Image (cartoon, rainbow, N blue to C red; front, top):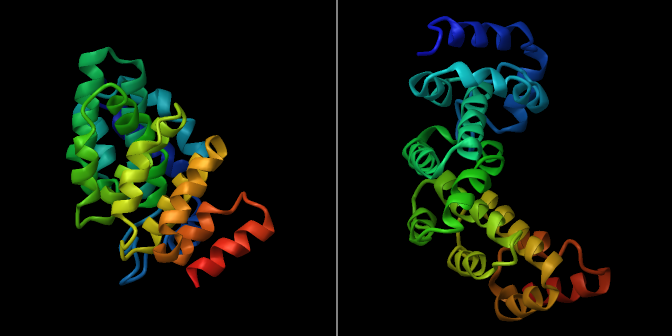
Length: 238
């Protein structure tokens, strides 16, 4: 049983280092104004390294308390709660890992900005799916929720690191006409990661799809190529 004051103490510690100036800057950076992708998000003003420094302190929290963090109104508390889930996943047995995977997907409502997705989806969703049915990725990619689509794509970074590219290519093909710039960036980033390991495979994908790829996606995908080749692909897009 966790100390009933542990969560309160942890939250107070976060507030002790909160920086209102950083908070205002973060709210601009993460597009929290009306109509923007992070609309309504609230920041304490704490850096990522500072948040990470508290992850071990979450070991004494029970699951309900971790979920209190995950569902917080404050961005950094949600981040800490998600990092706590990553830690429990990494340290857990198969049963624990499945439970954390299920918890993660049951709480995507609160995984609602790109930094929260990018630093946790590969570590939980991607790692679990290495050895399990990956059909959930197609369902996530078909979601109306931007962040669930991004979870699907970012989860495949784990596969890419193991030279498994087919899931990423399938999802990117499916998302070529996604309406959101953040998905264009995510897909282009994953293509670039494939290119680091299989340049011929990237070029083959581009040969089939460059003409209809969103410009941002294409630019991200070809970022590491030489200037002459980048220009050639961009001209094909034009």
